[in-house]
Image (cartoon, rainbow, N blue to C red; front, side, top):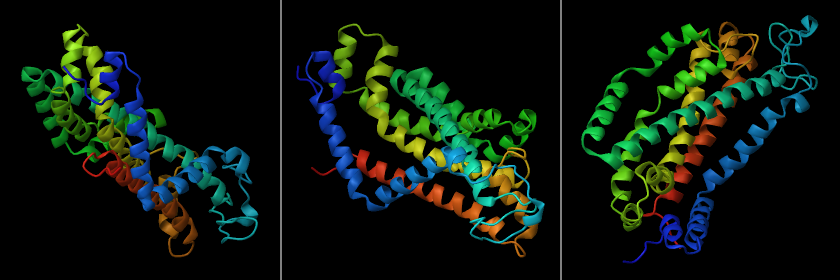
Length: 300
């Protein structure tokens, strides 16, 4: 029996994992060819660094009130202007980004992680297990997510942790379907047969040999899930159902400015641009990862 060119097969055979390094190199080379993804990754890295260093970078406290300078347009002292209470908009966008991006990241990790586990179990075991899990997925997918999120968020009183869990547990269905399809193919590979032959337990095969080889759709699912969660959080906050003030998020900053869009447009433009740039960058990165991890598109 010959071993396949995968990290798992080489581990079982006791060989050196050179194939894993070679695969990572191919993926990285393919990703670098996607110029929008590379530019987006650089922009997003700077943005994330800025928002998480907000206490160092921000010139003011996010809740510092200055009634003498309320509703000021952008100036040298206030780069993005001030709001109706004289709070510095640049500072609030940095602090708001910490909340919005964190909600996006952790909600995507929860949703994608749960979906990947459901899809892996469904595809690996097949039969009744597959039927039950996929029918449950179909039922969950048929329920409109946003109205349900709105209803459930009222019970959490718009707490950040509650929103993360709710959005994560209502966004796993697409990942489950995609991972199931990948696992149906992976479990037919020779290294899975070899792992079973030497007595490795099913849950170990799923976690150590099957899921790692389905990382392509999982990683893409995480990146796209972050953007979706940021938009959902912004929508909830815009409706007054997201994170409650005075904690700033990009969404509730837009909600606060909806009555002054004509007279103080900077209060709408800058939070909107922050959401637009972040989601666009994440989507471009997702496209680049999809191309890089798709074996039919990889070139030497």
